[in-house]
Length: 294
Image (cartoon, rainbow, N blue to C red):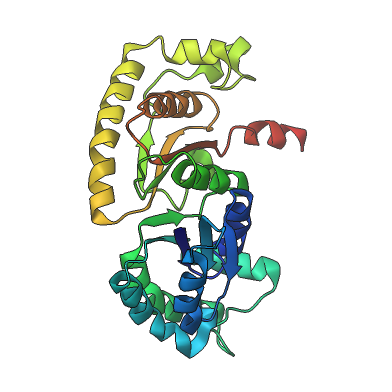
């Protein structure tokens, strides 16, 4: 039997992930009392059991018994039980926002603020995160993107690297994205905005893309950036980083930054040996149009 233990921070998407595992054909149990782990494994591994894949949702709702989880996992190792641990995480700001949107209280917060409960939970889960086979940061993931990531790992059996890379174009006049890890300024390139027929178009349009990439500096920048990112990613993975936001900015976030962000995404996406998650976003591409409508 293939067993996956799904755990992580409350609000990071464990319940959603369990539903996705059900869709992938797993027998799923959420919040199984930790003292029952051994009995569950014996039952599922019995010769007359028809269950080939199972997923267990485990979190701090187990209360005091959660402290027994480490010893239960050690017992499973001694008994030769094969299992993998999937840890779902998100940054504190995102977790707080999700709790406020659902108007729920954190299970460890009690009468305190949500951030206090999150801090307690991180401390409790630290040992489990270190034991995890897969760490998926859901901070920037839509539901469909999380589904694709889980299918890539557990259905396609792709080599997994615990990092998700977001390439983000933006406009400096709207501010640098606060969650950026790396920021690059491409305002040194000629601006298509000053060419009448391109002003209303964006870097997603062929005319703008061809214009921006007609300059040797754009290709040199793309080559150097690609090489640097390919160097950094494996080192970030070794350091334990599981989320990387690469922000590329121009003045308005519509022409040059979109073109160069698309180019970096294209280059990284075609490297089949790089099994990390990858997505692209254009934060400010429509903001000029919305301002004019007002």
